[in-house]
Length: 103
Image (cartoon, rainbow, N blue to C red; front, side, top):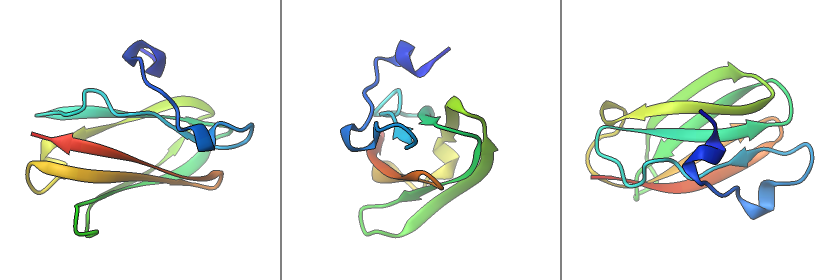
């Protein structure tokens, strides 16, 4: 399964050659789990941070991912409670953010 199958759209400011692309999570909003898709120009260690509306970090994940499309599964248990969140993907190629909502 690829990010394209979720009919996602990349961030316009992060589509240049050699930069990171973060796609809208799917499903969004979500109840139990959601997939966060991203594309890397080369293998790298990434950091995914989730912030609540007050700007507090409520979840963080890190890992090494390969060149091309990758995804991270975000579960309900990773977040404190239903609501709006900001997802920030930090890579050596740049940083990208998206909004997400959990019911």
